[in-house]
Image (tube, one colour):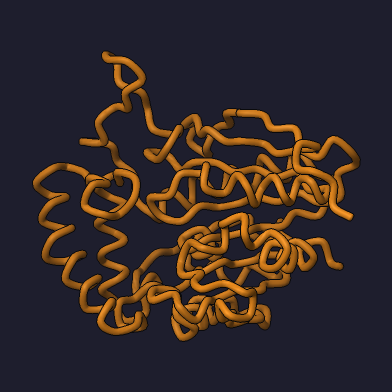
Length: 298
């Protein structure tokens, strides 16, 4: 029988990215023996706090879990020099999505590997968090990766009419707005504010037939480095991470045979799941348990 989640110790931490930038994270630890280490990697424009429930659940099961914010997001955004608890403007803040992978995700993997070198290290990637696994040079440190609604997010593979809305928003509203403001304001409906370079690279990938695979990033060669086990979950009511989009992303991991599973809301007694619903606590005994058992090899 499961014990209550108050058996979990939670600590707010800071650790350096590969270039020394201070990233803020939260460490979730079991009060008993540690069996696994797990790194949870966020979706675009999503702060780490939405993963707290799932991270606590994993820690309760014996995992040492780290959630963190990419630079420019959440608590990894610099504070303003004046004002009260106000974040610094993102105007002039230089970072791209590929930088998030190379500098922030790479460092988070390294930090977890060094701190918990005696434990198998699992990687949970939500949306962009899964994409980043293929771009980091040290992904060979990961034994198992669980993707949640993580996809090659080209607009062409989204459902209709959402794909037309996304294409129009990114190109005819988002890009001009970013050039005008110097960053992407969250109030347009994207979540958190985004740095200019992140949004522009995201828009470029979304508009490309094969998403990031159409870019000329040297880091794409890192997809083939990953040789761990990979299970990718897609949800039938998610208009963005459709099964074809998930399969396109997982096809980049050429050294392995990824497993792609489609889940319908009715499979877990839910009315809807979508792109973010996995992390709702109502799925503790269904989706969360299934991923946790797979991560821990049960």
